Image (cartoon, rainbow, N blue to C red; front, side, top):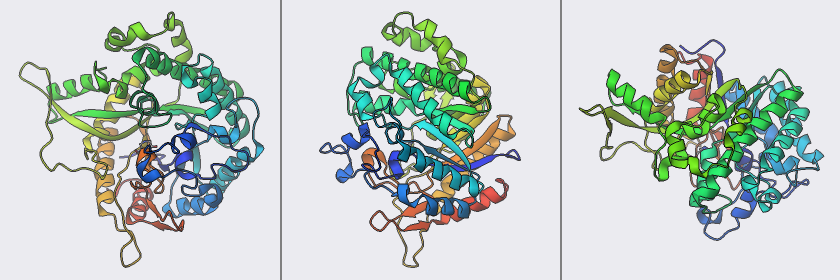
Length: 450
Ligand code: IFM
């Protein structure tokens, strides 16, 4: 069973929904620029207008209310409230978020704020971005402004969303902003700065408000046991926290989360990447390991493993025609169960699934509705698995479906739809999909109807 006070929510991020990219004093960020690069984004799409949420936030909160959401996770556009990333604060930017927060609270919806969902202010990028040793202080300054302005009403904060992705895709493969391909000798110190930034921000936030609930939201692809034998479970657990010596390393959970929660880098990771860490990195671990109140994890998929006859890892090959979302990601509900269990065992913090959902190529049917049985089936299967994790002792505190509404899916532009609410990007009309109505019933019954 889910706990009585289980947090049922949905999530979005600023660049993906707000639009108003050049308005009311907002500064530019790396995504504003990256989208202008030829061939970077599917059919040249960009987030200039996106879901026009900046203007339509009241209607969107009304939709959240109709969906029965208990909580809404959104991110702040750093450059909207601090156009240069540091220094001057843009009052119009603060006003937008103040209005949004007030509207949420007036409708009984708890706000969860993510500080950084990939939109580094362009001015900070010009100063070297996360490679600059001052970047943790920039981030702490920004966190301070956010908490000074909103913590009278908002108590839940998440520092970073998916550092794996904004470093991995942004600076290793170059498929996301800022579109760089850097070497490990730059990437590892950069990732280290992001972790210090997390720690410094948590400290700065706590110095202002003593009653905050602060977390971290990395992502992970979770191995799960093919069958639940003790050997298979042990192999899956080990693999979940192994740092690999290949291009998959940046998806690692432990490289990013062990320093934050346990105050150390994982041993296997250190053997491979330790030589790239800055000299004296050990002393930063004290800053990085700030007490946090919950552990957020974005989980979309995983892979089945088993122990072979020597008790070594065997990854089960996917069968032909296995279920996939429209992106091609495998549909593997067990990843949610075992992800939540393994994370709780290792980090001993309440677990929030901070993102999970299905992209489909949804259409409006002749009856004017959006029928998305695949998404309902996906969510049903994943939530059943999450409930099993809770039944088996993991402290599962909440679940945020990705995403409240269809939005700008980064390099895939508007071609992938994850929403509970369909958005017509030409007219900005919104239609609650069948899955949205279904999710409302899940929330109403606290997951008993699954
Ligand atoms: O849309 C993204 C989100 O911004 C970060 N996590 C994964 C989602 C789906 O790709």
